[in-house]
Image (cartoon, rainbow, N blue to C red; front, side):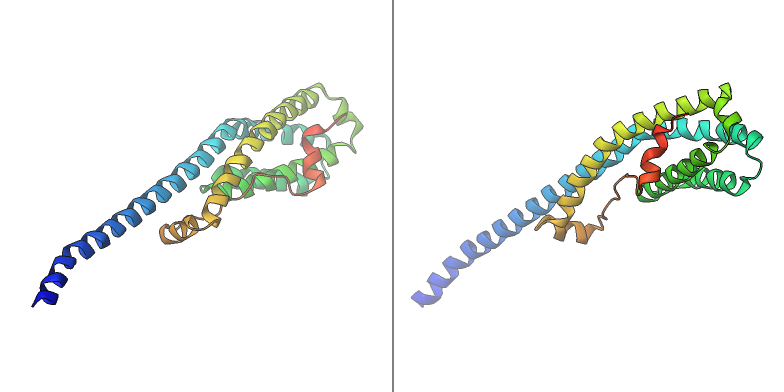
Length: 195
């Protein structure tokens, strides 16, 4: 009877220990979840800073294409590709889709500027030079803000990749975010076009 009495006294202690463990685990999960959410929100907020400049770029493109169209009538495919890339960039909804669409738009602008190089009259056009200067200025601002965005994305992606927060990330569907970078040398050179 004494052993049974001692075991009955241990049950509340064991239950209390189990409840304490569960509470600690729940608090840890909540903390990790909130940390991941904060980092994701920071990355999205950082992209919002870039968004103002991207919209400005989107607004410049039709005028630039029209100016080039006046001189480069044989370049319809390139001009169409730029406008299609612009449309895709303005219609993309998720952060990852927007980053990819903006990268494609940057590459198509690089090709447009390469085409413009072949037309001396276009390079001398005051309207084109003004648009080109505004685009280069916008691209430079995008480049500066891109660096901050990529830093917040790196922090977020690291958080969802390392243990134990990777478990929480998997449980709640946190996905890796894409970096906003230029993928080739032509696209990197696009903002620095010189005529």
